[in-house]
Image (cartoon, rainbow over all chains, first blue to last red):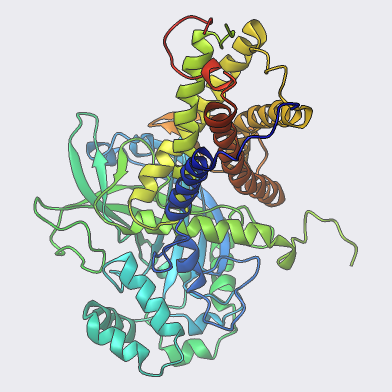
Amino acid sequence: MPETRQTLPIGPLLLIAMIIGVAALAFAYTAGWLSPARVSPARLVDAFTPPGKTPPLGHRRNHAKGICFTGTFEANGAGSELSRARVFTRGSYPVLGRFNLATTDPNAADATVRVRGFGIRFTTPDGQQWRSAMIDAPFFPVATPQVFYAMLQASGSKDPNAMKVFAAAHPEFAHFGAWAKGAPWTASYAEERYNGLNAFIFINGSGQRHAVRWSLVPEATPVAVTPDDLAKRGPDFLEEDIAQRVANAPQRWTLILTVANPGDQTADPSKAWPSDRRAVNAGTLVVSKIEAERDGPCRDINFDPTVLPVGIRTSDDPFPAARSAAYSVSFNRRTAEAAHYPRTATTGATP
Amino acid sequence: MIRRFAPWQRVLHWLMAICILAMLFIGVGMVSTIKPIYLTLVSIHKPLGIAILVLVLIRISLRVNYGTPPLPADLPEPLKLAAVSSHYLLYALMIAMPLLGWGMLSAAAYPVVLYGGVHLPPIAPHSDWLHTVLWNAHFCLAFTFFALILGHVAAALFHAFIRRDGVFQTMWSLSGSDKG
């Protein structure tokens, strides 16, 4: 500008800088950059890998070893009493899922992993989905996601007493330890009962709400096998067994919806409800095909337990939100690392 | 007397300013926490993103229809260029961010839930590499968007407090006609 230069307007410049600075700070605070103690989904997922170790690139950060299945859910209609979700009206709906092991090592020997899991996605013709990830333990080791994070930190700690200190502070963990030590092992994914553990709110056609936890109860009779016997089997005996069984005949589970009594707590999955709670048999899950994970349909599916149909909602149980947040991070990381876990079938590469 | 933006353009500008700022704060906030508010924030983020996409399309049609008040003749050329190009970038981000978000959910095979049983169809095939590309773009452009908005606010205040050239008044205040 041709006019003579005035003195710099310090006041207005400072005001502008302050407004922009405050906005940037508020943004940084919201993003958690000023709060190193905030348990972010990324920190929770990081905690699965002890310091100095490499995470299982291309794989789920937990429940890293698994095998895909497809099949159907044959709803008998009884679940409609509890939820208006389409999946409970009488009919047959496609399912996709994954048998898995609660380990961060995708190459773990099957006999070395205590907890077995089960991810599933139900799809109904109204375009809705229901996803769930369950385990064979009857309750969860800890009461809150924050304590779960502390547990991961303790187990990854170099301090040899870290787990003892953690267990002393969280008595529910000993309860889980007793289950892990005492509960019988089986030699098959098909003989396991898989439990949802988290409580959800089911809303039926008349708007009534019930707190519900669900389980898949196997048709196959569980046969107890000692861990020593399992250790003598091949590293992938569970995957070979389920592939063989399903090749011979479809494998079945009954979907049981367990309804809380009024007053039952719903926020803490480390505490099972009393065994006399009402159970509704909602139908039969039929697993009819097994595929290896590497090229299988479950590989790039996130079994996020908050993908719910209308008629099921989250409760005051804080875990589904924390799991959803963490699964998302795990999904984003592993899909970005696919080169570390290359597909075989779709690339058409020559040997 | 300066020509101002048309009243509907001003209404939409300030409405979208609130939506977009809320959206950016919700976005960085939701991925920073494992608390139950995570689910609440995610459930706002998706429909709000689609709302912004719809609003920006309306806004562009208004802009095509009404145009914009001219910049002051004495504004130096580099600043004019910065003003014009940054507005094109802001519009591009308003369109791209919701589409990238929708696309990355599609590529991950998540249902795109607006509210309850109201879903949007997927706009991208289920693909891990495509998900990664879209997710990275959505993530990086979010920070670009916020930085650009800070620059936009700083520039607006520069016009208001320092140059006092009437540019700020073309958008400020919802009342009155398009003659300032």
